[in-house]
Structure formats: C-alpha cells, structure tokens
Length: 252
Image 1 (tube, rainbow, N blue to C red):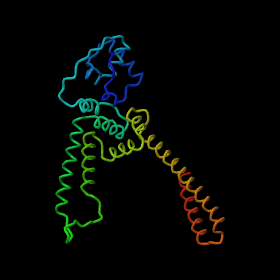
Image 2 (image 1 turned 45 degrees about the horizontal axis):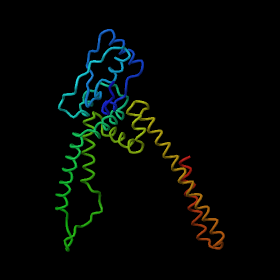
Image 3 (image 1 turned 90 degrees about the vertical axis):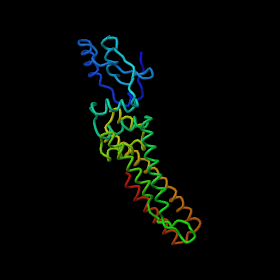
Image 4 (image 1 turned 90 degrees about the horizontal axis):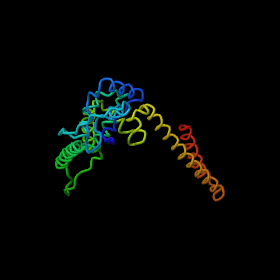
C-alpha cells in the first residue's frame, strides 16, 4: 500500500462519483496510464490508484526517472489539464509546490541575488554629504519593491495566472493558511475564503475597539473623580469616545 507524496497532495482528488466512474473504466479496459512512484510514494496517479483499489485491479506502477524537479514535474503534468475552479486556486496550488521545490528555491535565490547586486550598485551612485555619509531621500527602496514585482511576475507566468491572482493567493495564505489549503483542495472557493477572512478581521477589530471604548470610559469616570472641574480634559476624552464609537459602528 502506497502513501501519497506531498507534491501529489497539492492537487484536489476526484469526487467519489468520478472515482467510481474511473474504476469502472479500469475494470473494463485496464489501467492505461501507469502510476509514478518517487521515494516510495505516489507522485502522480492517486486517483488511478484509488480506482484500482475500487476495481480490485493490481495497479501498474513505475519509478520516477525524470531529471526535472519532482514538484515542478507534478505541476507541469497536472497544472493545465486539471479543471481548477479559479485562477486563485491555481495560483495557490502552484505556490505550494513552488515553496517545496528545490529548483524554485534556487530561482528565488537568483532573483534575490540580482536585486541585491542592483541595490548595491544603486547605493554607490547615491549622492553623499560633505562628511561622506549618504543623503537620505525618505523614499521607498525601489530595488526591494522591484524585486517583489519581478518575483511575482515570474511566479504568475510560471503558474499561468495573472499577477493579481497570484497576489490574492499569497495574501490569503498570509492571513489564513488553513483557508488557503481549503481553496487549494477545492473545498471552498477563493471568494468564500475571502468572505471568511473579512468576517474574522471585522470580528477581531470589533473586540479591539470595544476594549478601547471600555478603557476610555473607565478613564472618563476616573477623571470625574480626580479632576471634576477640568473641562478641557473632559472634552478631549469625550472626543476620543466619539471617535471610538464611530469606528466601532463600521465593524458592526
């Protein structure tokens, strides 16, 4: 009995109905495409393996012999032919494989090295003060921003999605890895995951603002006791209470 490789698990499985349909086909016509094994685990062919079990057919397996990184091999084999619900799901799955891939890590390091070199060269050209120190422009580090855009553009191109979809997929993963995994598995859509994260953020913010309002009200009562005749302090606290209540209303 074989376990599934983590690269294979990046993609969603067939539904039960589809698996039974595949099992019937294998029972009638045999297993046309072999199952690929890597490090003793199924790298490609989980659905065929499950269908063979259902059909009581001995699975035909072969060892992985390709020279390509196995993670990217799984993507090249399944990324386009699988029916994925959205570009965000596609970007999420590619990002999972990318993060586990040695060759992808090498590409990321290459992009970083090139950007660091460009930043070093740009630093040499920056104007300096009379004492030799560099002037501060107060602006954004363009090389860092450029590195981010360059990396994201490359990632989006490799995944076959637009840069916006890649950015949204990464943002979701940063906010909620659990929901990101559910999108990749096809359990929920990206739109539903986004609604859930928005709801969670609003709920958290509501509690934060409520706590702030409680503390300001406590301060207000203390002020009445300590400085009952200080109209300016009272006015400032009332202003803060009004701002907090207004912010709280936006989360309700």
